[in-house]
Image (tube, rainbow, N blue to C red; front, side, top):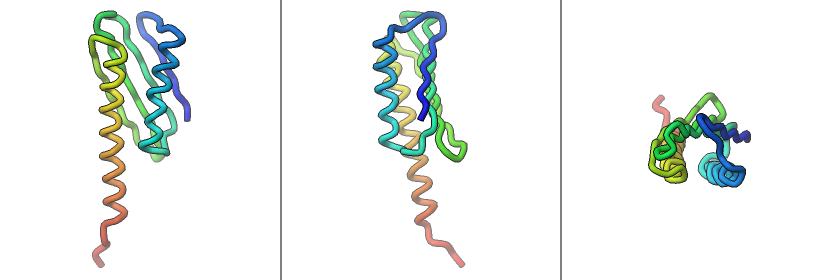
Length: 104
């Protein structure tokens, strides 16, 4: 799995980037077929950073979330929660589809 962190309108310290990478890699616990994670942090307004999170999975499924918050890590946590919800809904949909009896 590939993890990419990019920043617009500023820079992040190496330790902050490592913290972000460590948090987003926890998504593999929920769905093991993830192929890439792209985190984009927009620091145009330092008092309200925007975090975009795009998670790609096998079979062309993408999970996307964007949150603006007062703090960078709060915005990251909110985007992670949104993506986790999307992953859970997707997994439930797949499992129900495979378990449903076929009418013949």
